[in-house]
Image (cartoon, rainbow, N blue to C red; front, top):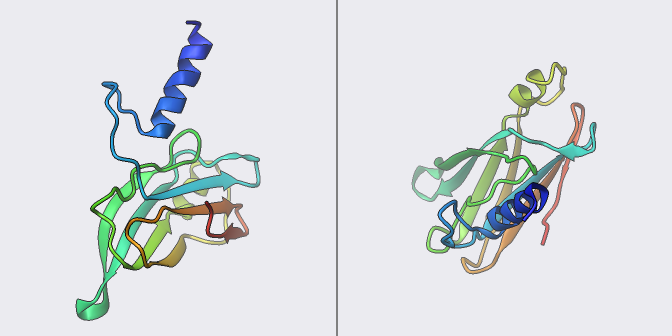
Length: 140
């Protein structure tokens, strides 16, 4: 197999949830994909945190910290068994992302708050990002 074909195969395997050892991890029921609309490229290396609003005291509980991969995706946010109905928040550290690129920006962070009602349903939260604006929606 050519090196280019091997790289494409590895990228596809990672996207589908294969680990380095070749085993299959459980697919994530919550995913995000961030695109830098100023460059037209995936937003690689954008740090983010996932929180869930806890009933007691209405406090945000941090579930996971991660960053986007070379394709602007963040797989493995919530796997089966980790998801439960409730209010969740994805917090993206946009200030650091733009500073690393030598770019001034308006929003120091972006927080997307959403509700999950069925723990078996897949949720995709895309973010389209520029230094001066952002857009999000419920993806598929």
